[in-house]
Length: 282
Image 1 (cartoon, helix red, strand yellow):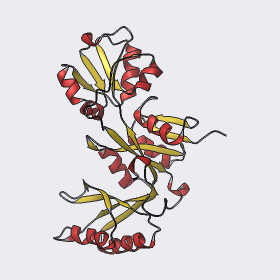
Image 2 (cartoon, rainbow, N blue to C red):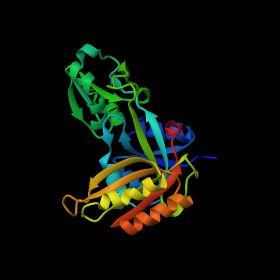
Image 3 (cartoon, helix red, strand yellow):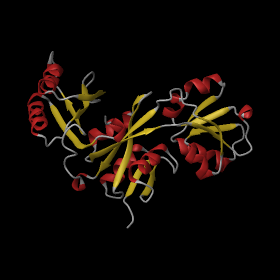
Image 4 (tube, rainbow, N blue to C red):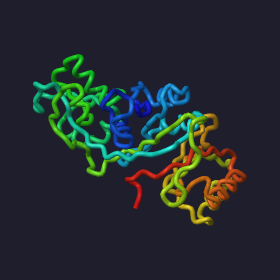
């Protein structure tokens, strides 16, 4: 039986596709999309069974487009994947490292390889995708140019890896979220420590409101694994808070705190409960 079709941002060989294969195996179908927004739209419309989108990198931090889409979209978060990212410098088969003058890639990848790019004197040029940069070099036969992408992208497009492991930090990893159409999502993750719940809330713009919202988690002994603020955009200097907590929304203790938070907050949206990534488990 064929596996599900899963949407991702980029061309075949992108890190998002690697994350899909890591989590679901190679029997699934993958559907490239031009942007993170398009992955959400495909998922909402039921044109793919699932979507996989990057949400944060261990070196460069959060992916703002994903957070903005989580706020406006109706999808549910049903899983997470943590992928160790190994960047390669990839060029035409005839290329030599000494002849490379410019390097193309997604802005996150360029930033994660900043030391290498600077030390080799390469001119960085931003593109929309890592694997897409490799594809472009092949199709345009760009001499003196290289791309930063994964080794699989080089294999797919028949190009050469000039140097592997050019990322600035050996721990460089990206966390991805698995999203599903709300009507098809299964509520809850894996009750207990091995589950996470993601949510968004806003508080009234007055002293102590954020403390009052977070105090309920501390009193219940619920660990916050991440908190991220994003501007509301409608009202200057007011923010939405994106929070990940340990525990399942169906757990009575977590459910009680979420009910308390809803009463204290100006806005609350629970994105979903899901099993924690294997890379995030003790």
